[in-house]
Image (cartoon, rainbow, N blue to C red; front, side):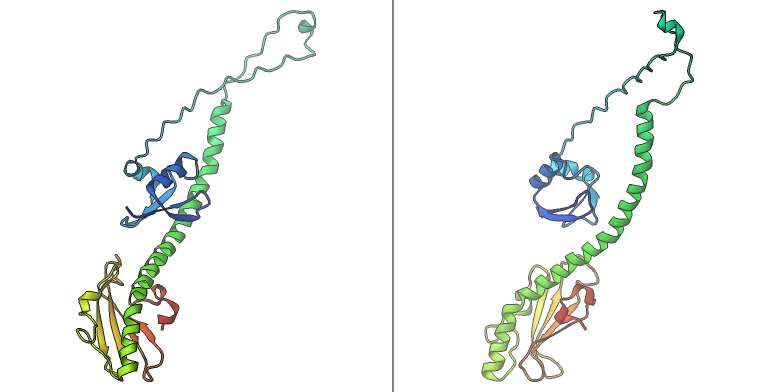
Length: 241
C-alpha cells in the first residue's frame, strides 16, 4: 500500500510513513483521531478516525470519570459560637455550576476558534500539497525520458540525422509507457528540430492526463529545449514558458 502522509498538531505535513508507523504515532500521541491523513488514491485528506478500520486502530474509550465534590468552605474565625466549641451551621447557598462544568465551558470557548483556524489552514495547505504531488509526478515522467534523450542526441550528433520510432534501436511510441507516461513519439518536428513528444497519463488530474510535453535539440542541435501545454505550476523551471 502507498505511504501515508499526516498533519501533526502544528499542521505541518509529514510522510510518507507506513501504516504501522502511523499507528505508532497515534499510540504515542503524535497524531490524534482528528488529525488529517492522506495516501495516494484518496480524493482528499480525512481525519484519522475515518480510516481507523483500514489501519486496524481500535482506540480504547476514554474514561472521563466523575466530577469531584466541591471543596468545603473554611468556617469563619470570628464566629462567636465556634469559639465556644458549638457546631456551626452553614448558611443556605444558591445552586451554582460545579468546577467541572465551568472547565467544559472554558474548553469549548477555546476550542471553537481553534477549529476555525484549523479549517482555514487546511483549506490553504491542501491545494498547495496537491500541486506539489502533481509536480512530482510530472518531474518523474520527464526524468524517465532522460535515457531516450541521450539516445536521440547520440544519433543526431553522430549521424547528422534525426531518428524516429521503430528504427536505430528506438522503440514504438507505446513501448515508452511508464508510471505517468502513455506514449512517446520520436522524430523531427515541423520546425526542423529533432526530439520527441511525451504524453502524460495516470496522474489523476484531467488538466494533465492526455496533455503533451516536447523536448527538442534546438535549431543548432547543441542544447535541449523543453515546452509543454500543461500549466506552468506543475512543470519544472526549465520547461515553463
